[in-house]
View 1: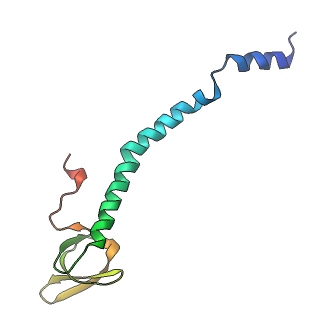
View 2 (view 1 turned 120 degrees about the horizontal axis):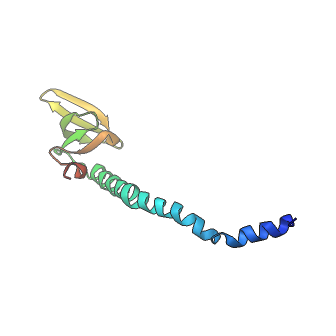
View 3 (view 1 turned 90 degrees about the horizontal axis):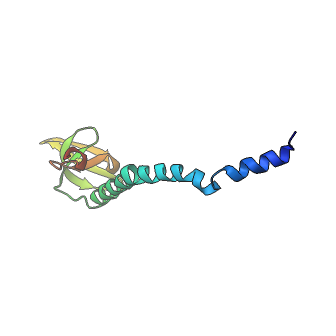
Length: 108
């Protein structure tokens, strides 16, 4: 009958190094980063710069699908002119892009 500690030592000696067990997990994380996280951060930075550069007269579209012309820009609010006598106030964060601007994901 073998001693339990000796069996444990043999089993540990036969296994791969500890860091090799984490290689598949790191590989999956790297794939997710380069395919999902990095492009999403790039789009988010581009949208943030677009929102910061809004000025009167820009034609924009909101997340809700409203198309309008920027009539005024306030601290966190944009006044959009939707029709001749119709102006609405929307949050700057509701602006999704300029009118007619293609989404990079739609080009593929």
